[in-house]
Image (cartoon, rainbow, N blue to C red; front, side, top):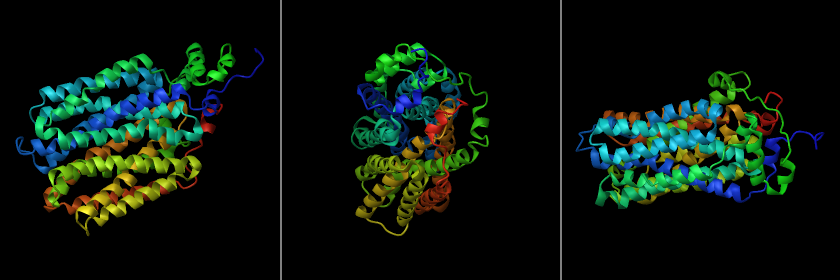
Length: 452
């Protein structure tokens, strides 16, 4: 046994069958990201109730949606260094507790524009941890051959269901209980946090990077019980246990510069379009003659279709990972053209069809971009890479609702919403498509490289 070669953790995880622990962790991450998606999208259903009482201009209403995203930006960018140095598990749990606390405070304390925005900012600090680390966890646990599909089921399903739930609560409960019911129900994440404390393990690749061998043996035996005997006295391939002193500089090093900059530009444009659309779609559809219930239902429709679109794209990407940038470009180009069509056509059926296409293509592609990003970096940079992608993207998400509200204020009509969102999606398609076949280095090559 002493002469046997070290076990490569990446190869062990890549070759695993989907087992009970994979499924349990997938369900847990799904539920965590459900609350992330729910909390991210529910401010769109607050605008209707507070715009007049709080005397909000359209630009202020846009910032009301964006305020949580400002916090998300800082959380997403800042958490990566912490998670890459101290661990995924503790960082994710801390983010959950931040969301729990400030969601409750939003329901009970927020009474005007500024108090609501301040509490949403604080909530966003926690939300900025959940989606990036959920993506990182799934990417590091899932067998490589199904990584995109597993990420869709383990992260995107939850996030999309959260958006659907926000729409359903907005339509059916807020008329009876006020907008605060959105946040009282959001506080149901508290019991989930206790479950996460009990069952969430540390990332196996992080354990390998930190040479926490005993914990790694135990976890691998749970992930691959048929190999448990091989792990009892095993040693694992040497990895660099040191931390990355400057993750941003590493992400912009010659090895990653082109991929990083392209991903950041694409994420900015994608999330500008997504949050501009989801933040304003209920209000804009009412201006186009839709009923209150139908207008709020468009948000839920987009989120439901985003999962279908993301899953379809993920299945294509898993068949040929090198073509992922081209698939992403096709999705965003199609969605952008569909949104632009709303400038020229109207009617309930047309509105439904185009909003469904926008969710399928524009939001669906963003889900796959998150996993593509996670697979583009080595273990010690992965959380930072995903965090920076979503952090830079959240700058677009912050600007989307605000800029679109300001432009509506200047133009006096809703058509500008579709021009700006459709244009952003189309430019994002050309950006990610420019990577072509020369996309990120294959993750398998990264994770087994001598530098690690």
